[in-house]
Length: 583
Image (cartoon, rainbow, N blue to C red; front, top):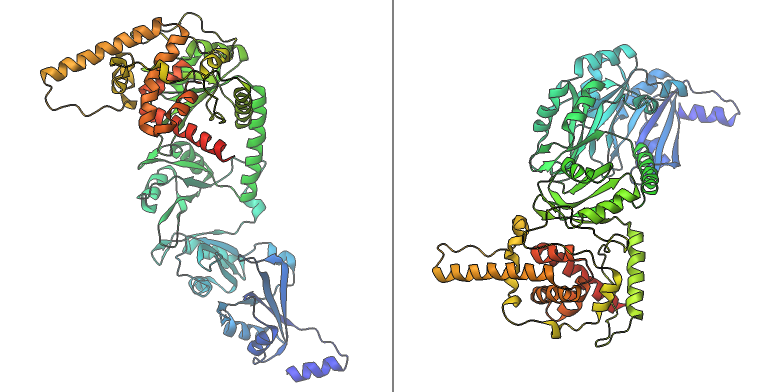
């Protein structure tokens, strides 16, 4: 038959084939000769042509390969298809189906169904075997990843829409290989999501899963809001959860209710995040819009956004908003939290006007809020903070040092003290017992004390007791942040006497600090900070302490109270010194 077709061609006689097969999923190294060897043995074979489409790439980045095989009759083509479909060629199973010459028929989706939640062991052949009882199948495919593993979903196209409807009705919800199948009508991309009505969705994306949260647990929680068609937790090669997944509901209303109810709830040790599932293009467009909106928001509320830290762990957004509402109209508040929902101790508050923001810095910086003194300053972007630090660094390098040359290091990214026009008026909130916060230091005050050598200002005796500063009664509400030695099992009389003496010293120190002149106040804080930094960094302590003295008093007192905060600032200062030395 093949020889007769060749002779007819040489004679100039062209007879169009009456049937053709499409061969898909062809391995990239397969040759046309191999395909001819496979199909030429069947009756009615006429020709085979291999196509390497470099404009359409596979998952691994190679060209998509497929072929067409022509037969004399449709019956002969179908016999060849039944014998060769799913045959392994060069280590990859080919997919053979009747070629559809009408593009509209191929893309219409008539008779096509979508199957989800497939077991990893189900391939093209097994999927066809499962659905062949509902009608004649034209095409069947399981979608695989770059490494050839099943993604858990696939497509089946029947010859008639009636067979597709029967498969949906009968197979949806059935258990195959221990997993509940989800079978639905195939929908093209433009039908799955309508940009004009973004509220019409049924598929949700969730993340931040605890390792011990299973699919069964999630299915139980999400099923409270409506019927679930499928639920999948993404897993790695070892079967461990990647921490995210998808859940699809039968009704849009159920998906919306699940998103509202399940988003930001505590599930295990982590806070769950739930949102509408988006395609990559949608997500990229959404991120661009968010970036544009953020830029507009930052421009609109420039110098109105405040950075607030040293916030008590028990404070939530609403309480922070109420506190700042005493000063002006609050646009937004946000306390930054870990993935487990634990407060990081800092956040942001946006006021409606620049004047209200400036007033908040003046009145609330250093004020007690839930037992901790707040640090409040105008928030800066990374670029603004970088420019500020460069300017301060240049000014320090140009300044004269009367006793010591100032080492050439740049300042770490600490927030600056409030600008000169924000002097603190009489304190609006009750100060801590035994201590009243002085107004923030201005740059000229800081410059006057930068060249001061540390040693002449050290005080020997009781005020050099570094451990006592963590037991100052004025900072008793900050017990969560203090580093205290374990209490003795039974307090002896001499220990009680020593403790009372230390407490008395702390009360004296707080009183002396409140009544001291600005320069004397600097000396007292220096004497307290230096021994603590020496314990952490040894020889670098004087240089690091000079950096810490650039902060305003409210933040310096926080460092004296919190060993954790002090260690973090010391590390930042050391990194800056090392980077400057390397340059």
